[in-house]
Amino acid sequence: MSEEKFGHWGLLLFFFCCLVAMILIHFLRRSKITYFHETGLNSLIGIIVGVFIKHCGGSEEIREFSGFKREIFMILLLPHIIFESGYNLKKRNFFKNIVSILLFAILGTLITAFFVGGFLIIFSHKTSIFNLSTIECLLFGSIISATDPVSVLAIFQQLGVDPDLYANVFGESVLNDAIAIVLVETFLKFRDHDVTAVFIFKSLGVFFGVFLGSFGIGALNAMISAFLIKHIKVRDFPIIETSILFLFAWCTYFLCEDLGLSGIAGILFCGIVQAHYSYLNLSEKSKELTKNLAHLLSFMSESFVFIYLGLAVFCFEHDFHVGIIFVAFFLCLISRFFNIAPLSWINNKIKKNHQISAKKQFVLWFSGLRGAVSFALSVDLPTPHGPVILTTTLIIVLITIFLFGGLTTIVVKKLDVQVENPPIPYMKNKGLLKLERKYIKPFLTHRKYDPAKYDPANYSPYPSNLEVPLLDSQNDKEEKIENPNEIELENSNENQNQNPNEIELENQNENQNENQNENENQNQNEIENQIENQNENQNIN
View 1 (cartoon, rainbow, N blue to C red):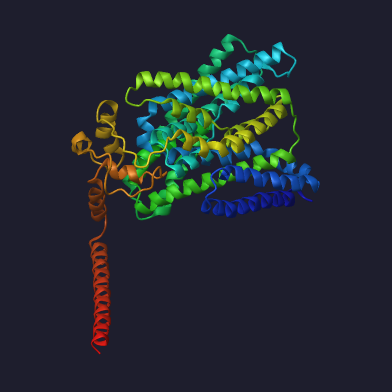
View 2: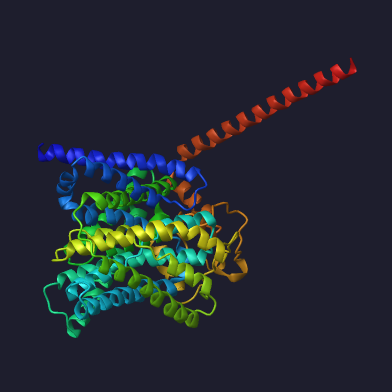
């Protein structure tokens, strides 16, 4: 079979698995099953197909087809997942809990990476359980520090957990993925160096330089896209608007990669800033289109990764090492505890009004699943013991997906961290936030600064006009809260941009619709009166 023909069959296999997964996910969502979730279903489909392929003698061909898989993950799949996380971010709850999120995402990821990596170095050098090099231990610690609680967040959304808890889990996973990827890329750059104290500090310096540089480029490109969309007035062409927004994000990714920075971190921050500025300049059709398209690409990419993860169980050559799997799994659990407990204590000392209770800390510890990002980072590592790291990561990801993900519903209900009608957080209008609202946002968007709307006297934590479901990934709910007069301002701006003839046509259409509705109501009333008269005559007779 030719290479091209074989490639087509391989792609057909993956797309067929995705098609089956979509159909089964539909029935899963309609059912009331809570202990089995979508990521587990995708992985299970991959495992079943992998068993079939292995017994049919096709595992060698699948491995050959997957020879360039790391590039597929890092260029075609992960950017969609990361961008959607930033673009569909719930801004208010995210920034309300920004202190705890940054603590868990930055310090927590570093604690996990060096805790796991450090103890693996000790076990590797002081015992005969396994034999990994120092840089491989640090690489594994960085890989396994990436949390991916997709299934947990879906269950949180169904059960309606506390918004602050949801924001912490989601916010940590968003930033944590980017930080773990940058950390892995940093160690890969220095894999041929001797690991010393100077090496560690130099690696951390490179890590923070890459991370901050990627943040700057991502934020700058997003602001340029907002300014451009505001002034070229493409609101009448939703496809062009959407294309401009996504092309800026992709340009950010490749620009960061070409500059030696992290494209993943760059596209994440580009998505967050675009959601804050560019989104406000889009037409209503483009707003809906960009959200749905970002979610679609992310959903398909994650499904592909988890199906691929299931296929890898039986289709790839593995180097099982029970000792390192056992030790690494328990190091993950212990490091998660030393991540959550001390950082929650620090957060409670800093933020007196936003305490993280013991129940929430346990849920945060429990929801630190490993998933698509950890698996993708472990694929095709250019190290002597790369297959050992891949196999160990795969086993830990599967355990956390099926065991911890399946028990999430029970844990949430037992600890009673659900909230039926959560209040909308109020963000004070002072400091840098006031500066941003007064100067930056009006410059980049159509929004005008109105101090009255940020007055606590005008704030309502339970607006009566909101009918958006709890923890929806859309930003519409927050936009309505932010300024009750902005809808009128946007309508006036749209009317100014429209031609008088278009406005007259719209008014005529509205009047025609109103007249039709009135005529229909009149006809219905006449029919009801006739029926009543007939009934009265029958009663008289």
